[in-house]
Structure formats: C-alpha cells, structure tokens
Length: 200
Image (cartoon, rainbow, N blue to C red; front, side):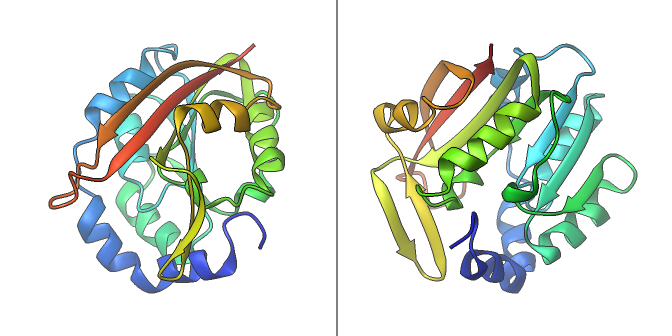
C-alpha cells in the first residue's frame, strides 16, 4: 500500500457527497485557534488531505494564504467548488509533496491517519521539509494503537507516546498534545489525539 492506499482513496471517491454532508459544516474553530496561535498573521498554510475544503476555507476567510490537496478526485472537485478562488486546490497524494521551506503551517486534520506505519517516516519527512523554520504542523488521529481496517479504509491510531515516537525521525518538536471528543453528532464517544509540532 502506498501512502493513503487505493482502497481508502476509492472509498472517499465513492462517498464524497455523503462525507461532505457529514463534515463540511462542523465547527472546528477551537482547533483552528490552537493551531493558528503558532503562525504569523496572513501566513502560508498547506492543508494536507483537505477533504471537501472545510478548513482551507476557514483559513482563507481569516486571510491566510492557503494551498490544499487531497488524493481523492471527488474530494478535490467538491473542495474547488467550495473554495472558488479562495485557495489553490491540487489533486495529489502525500507522497507527491515536494515543497521545501514554503509554508508557515501545515494542517493535517484526520488525514495522516490513513498513512500506514511503514510509509509514515517518508511521508512525514516530506511534510516537515515543506515547513519554514519555526513553522507549525497540526495533525490528528483516532486515539488507540496500531493499524486496522474498517470498511474499505485503513486507519493508523495513536496515543501520545506512540505519536511522539513516530515523529522522532522528523525535524520537528512536538510542542502541544491534547485529546478531544469527536464533534460529529452521535460520535462523541470517539476520542481524537491532536498535536502541534514545530520545525526547528
């Protein structure tokens, strides 16, 4: 399986409209604020695994410069419709990331959790390299341990300990870790681990 994997991307292509209905209007402002406190006003953000563009739009509306990408063609189509000229949206995968020191922040909300452990070091090295010195990187995972398949999708769960260990190879320092409940209706019992890491 290569980074997100064909089955996972296929799932999002097939279910993009339903996924948009379930997630596009969720209030993520508390997470945005905790991430943005590490960024300069109007900084450049990479939304890595942008889905339907919910967070990219929120950042653009707060006058940040945003580049977003997703591996699902259908998600990209919906994100482009949502964002219009507010942000550049690319159809690409994590493994395609080739930017070097171009972003003040990276937002990877519930996206890196689809990267298998075997691919995680290479992918996170690429993403860390895309950050400018002092740049901040938000990421989130379901609370738990190890890889598992649910439906057609692969998930990589983490605890604080396992996430810190998984990021040791990257040129970043974890500066903030916290847990939250899922904000989707009926899923409040599902836990998420959130982290912000900063490039030295």
